[in-house]
Amino acid sequence: MPIVRLRRCSAVILTAMALSLAMPAPIAAQGDLLIAPTRLVLDGRRGGEVILSNVGSEEATYRVSLELRRMTPEGSLEPVDAAEANVTEAAALEMIRYAPRRVVLPPGEPQAIRISARPGAELPDGEYRVHMAFAAVPKVQPIASPETAPAGSFVVKITPIYGITMPIIVRKGQLEVVAGLANPRVEELGDGAYAFAVDISRSGGASVYGDLLVYGSGSEPVFVARGLGVYPEIGSRHTTLPISAEQAAAMKGPVRVELRAPLADGGALITSLDAVLR
Image (spheres, rainbow, N blue to C red):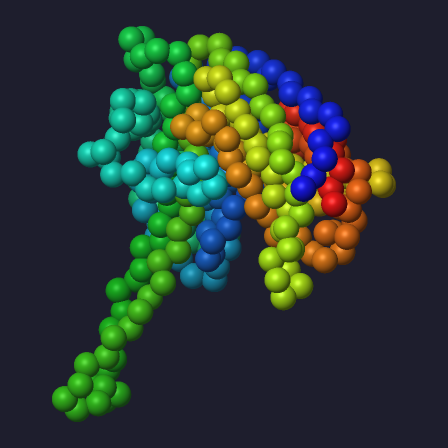
């Protein structure tokens, strides 16, 4: 069990302003599709955009849609049917506008999806979230020619459909969130596999999002995990991340665990924890 020597939490004041995109944005890839940024925060006064790029060698078509997802305490995102949406989720779906909803991308050419949000004046201050999905539309192709299809049989062809999802977050009003770290530990999973586990907590009206860094005795981090979020529907996220045997060995003894804002947003310290791992 880890021995915690000191715990520090920092309050992060989140004013209702859009994230600055002046610095390079993270990129997500699936199949031949790239999107940037991978997360968009709006304040309801200014819109934003997501850039889609086809890095394949053939023209591709993508369908753009909105989905609802809820985070579990383990950090996974479970789909939510629109008919089962709560008041906050239904309001988020209602306020988001975007275009186009279907994109045909020649190889190497980008396309912008324009996004805006108009939260109603009657809505309480808070954070509202939907997830934008980009799904490849498969081309219609013949299954088999009469010459190649065996007599008296049929052929089934399975075509994988690639897709990416990204959160779109709308913040209304001035929101405050307090983040914390607890229970850091190295777990031995068997067969030479290890994991680093830590609980990331949040309280307040907004989500927490950042990069997790673990320092041992040196000045450089032993381990870095980018883009970890804790959404408002949960108060704490139990995070388990795979690490190498070398990283596990380097974490034995005193460590410092930090949660920092993404580098694209300045990398400011959100919260930190000093502990001794056995």
